[in-house]
Length: 323
Image (tube, rainbow, N blue to C red; front, side):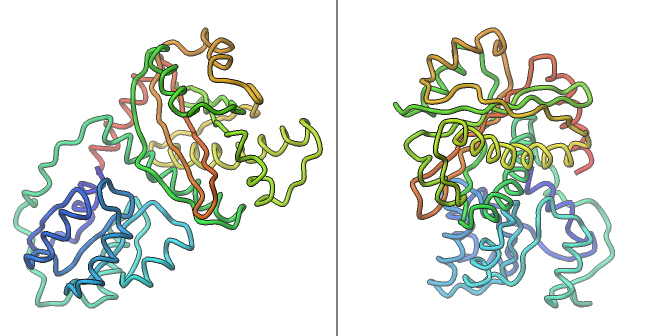
């Protein structure tokens, strides 16, 4: 989905051949073959991410001009990629005018590289399914949430590749057990609804990490009530920013309920028993944020009701057509 969006955003009259890579190692192989004079590089990728790829390009002295295109819009992310040699940074989803202005500013769109557009690029024939498209939408949304979280906590947030799955309750149970990793958890739940799409955001905090989180926030909770307030505030930041990022991309407006403490110092078994009736079959987006230089991570699950799937699918398919 990200590659399809970007290829469509390239100036149609720009006379270039396009080589695609799904991750950093493939990109390096293509650059070594001379197939990447100009490289549009994502940051969140499997196998080898964008930071590692930039470091390798610099270490090997490979000749290419790198423009980062990413949903990770943390100020520290921008600083790091520039330090590693990237010439510019375009925020996802990359609009055509931003791509054009960046190419012009870098002198890559000169008269000698332009020709009259005669036919659509063959490279546009990319197969993108619903799950891949929703994963990319989630990737952009989690980047915005991470930028806000980084500002609040004063840290760099490491971003994963979001996972998108349709779960039965038993499968959701197993996914949550894996997230727990044998630890005690506190969970905050926040409902949302908009344009026939509804669900719940479930944010899991690991109890063993809460002292570190409190220090980052400058809190000194003296009892369970103050601890609860801290969790609710943090959940509002993470969940709200992520939902807003999704809503903007698929053109809906979510109304959000107040965050509620679903369970504190509980096991996953207890949380499942409390909510078995609400979670039957669900579309789940899983995002695990982690904080660099701190043993802290948050597991966010966006759980969409089964009734929401039809409308959400239409929204995603419309977005794919536009891209």
